[in-house]
Image 1: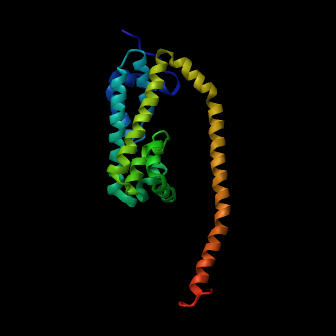
Image 2: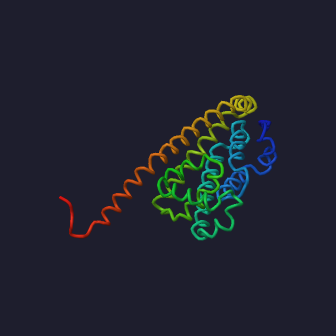
Image 3: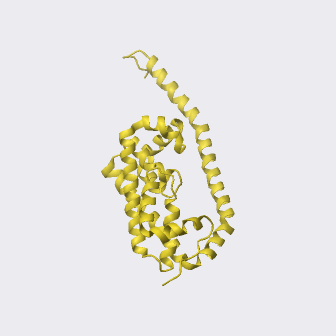
Length: 232
């Protein structure tokens, strides 16, 4: 029988959980995380994939359970948001850092990019836990929008982290050390991307007021002109 891999860093505390509960730990923690409960769903998925790579679990079973749990968890979140509405954010949003102001911005963003947001949110902490709830509150169509894009995001997310953990297998310590070594570079790259996006946003805001003001002036002028009288 293959020995259990020694998990490094943040994964180490999950070793006993994976050894004692295996597939149950994967299914339950991923499910809970995906409708807002603060548990390490993504971390346990990677750890379980590492165990699969070392021959301790079946990788297909790990991936299938994680996919089903992720989809079901987000759909529970969607139901909570749909039934709870804005009152839910007003009362409990602060516990998951979702203030009314942030929700207003998220709602606007969801209405513009709904499907893509649901798919990409799977890879972003906080959004992964809250995207189902936000989609439900904003009344995103369930069958035609939320369900397919959510399933796509879950499939991509599970495939990525299962592949990473399974490939690492018993070499997880070496892989983890490399990740830690280069995480500063990744953080710097992420910071550059954020700065570029913020810069574009600020430039767009500086351009829009002039355009908006001109449009409002034109409307006011048109409203002030007597009906039936138009300049030729």
